[in-house]
Structures are given as C-alpha cells and as structure tokens.
Length: 99
Image (cartoon, rainbow, N blue to C red; front, side, top):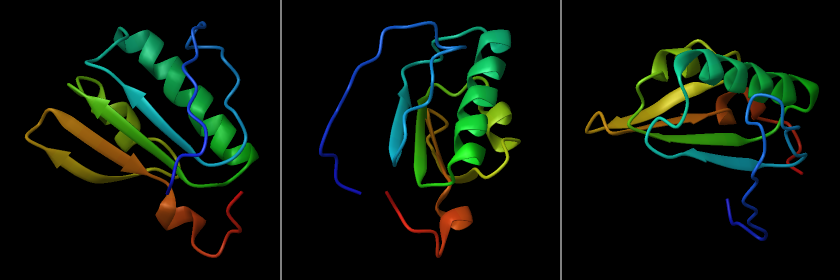
C-alpha cells in the first residue's frame, strides 16, 4: 500500500467522518480514554461496513487493543513488543476492488 496523500485531521475523533478509500490510521500512545476509543472504533467499523476496503490501524501503547480485536472486519496481524498493535481488514477484502 503506497501513500499518495497524507492528511492530519484535527477534529472530534468520536464523530469525524471516515474518508473513502484505503486508509492507514495511526493512534499515538493511547490518545483516548476507553469510552472515547470505543466510539472511535465504532466509527471506523461503520465506515468500513459502509465501504469495505483495506484499512490498517497502527496503535502504539495499545491499552484498549481489545476493542480493536473485537471490531468487525479487523484482524490483528502483529502485536510487537506489546507496544504496537497492528490491525488490518485485508482478510475481509480479498477479491474486493481496492479504491
């Protein structure tokens, strides 16, 4: 997956619309309390369900990684050193045209 455009979004993480197309989402060092992370996960899953596509979540200091493990469509592909968890929708998107 090559990045052709990178955007930093400053917004309410629990309600920001999830952009179309393939995404890499990076959460630095557990940026939200658990209730907010739950809302973020729900928002990302809703975006994925509305438009199935490749999404990768990189989560440093994954205190709430269990929320991502339970997220529909996401598979944990790495949990290196217990400091970085990586979740991917690729397994769900096999055969789905990538945008």
